[in-house]
Length: 268
Image (cartoon, rainbow, N blue to C red; front, side):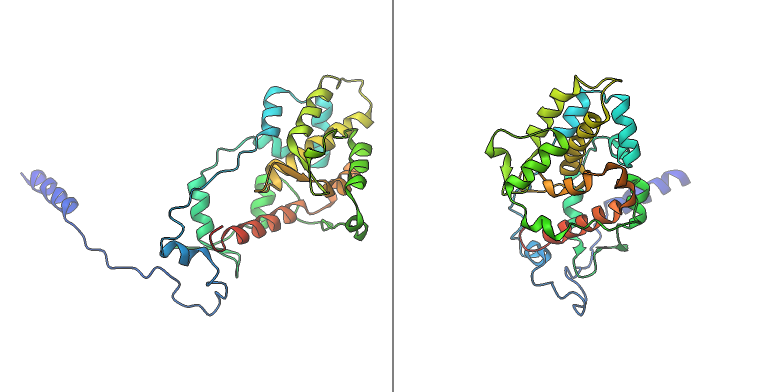
């Protein structure tokens, strides 16, 4: 009888309608939040963002290539030497777009912090180093001033010299320094059949550079415009043996911060 009464009490507690006091939707104080007027949160509270459709950007060139082609041990060893093979080991991730959207809405560009009901949270250099296996110490990723004077023809010549690939269609370029990823993948597929144990180091390095361009454009430095990768990365890919000496982890984290800041503003 006692157990029955306890069960009845539990059921009654569940069906009781609990009135939850209204919660103030915005920040309690704006002293530090100087960009609140441009932040997306006021738009959401006023219902201006609710009708917008979120369109996920699917870029599968690298993962489609890797799923259809097993990397030759020579390529694997070269990627291990550069320190970027961990990205391929992680593989294609199943992303929760709703969660990502919710996190962007909670991002504050003034402090580079997620403001959550349980407190503040942030993505750290340690997270990048542990998860991606990329160095956060070392030389900064910086480009020489001469690259600012490069034209589209200059980048084409660098691309052909370092990778052996020269696009035949002007449509594959966006501006003067961005290249579409699909032609890169198609050229890699043509090169893949020729990789053997006797392949010269020159061709191994060219193959590795093209694969890393795919990696940069798809996984590490993606963009929302098109499936593009910046050819400015070729400056650092020229000397593959030097790659572990640069702070790639810090650069990737800085790029992530910058993109989240852009996405959290207004009706982006």
